Image 1 (spheres, helix red, strand yellow):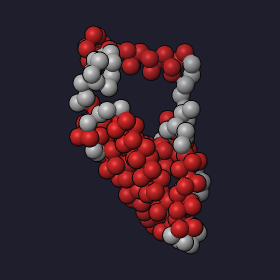
Image 2 (image 1 turned 90 degrees about the vertical axis):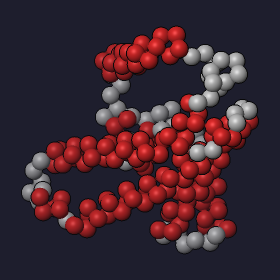
Image 3 (image 1 turned 135 degrees about the vertical axis):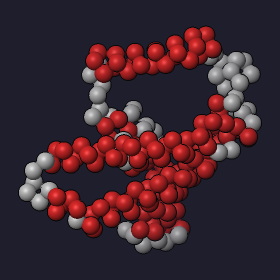
Length: 192
């Protein structure tokens, strides 16, 4: 259901390869219909491309809002959902702009014209990409996650049972780290 974390070194890779793809095709078909048939945007074009991306994230945001509203969660707790999802259209444009600028400067061709150290360059680009994705997610995730984390646990809240309340933050973090190590070595779930 999820791809490898190694593909998440761009926002496009995060959403298009790593994160689950359960609604991708349905959202994409609605978006394509909207941008090409209703708005009659020329395909392919930059406006059509980013209008599609924005439409897909609006649909995803609306889907999350409907789930939260249907769950009886107060609006104040999910009000940042649309801002969170729609911010990714701006993130994609930023990412594409930086990648295009990198290509146009020709730095890569000048520094690596002889083809040596291509593996090092690839690793460098991935590391920069992972820092970018983590940085972007760190900035926009609070719009979505922070209000939801304020929802009480127990019978009245969203989470019926809190493991963290029972084992503490340190115990929960230890469990996550142990699980990650177990996946890495036991199941060889490296994804890079």
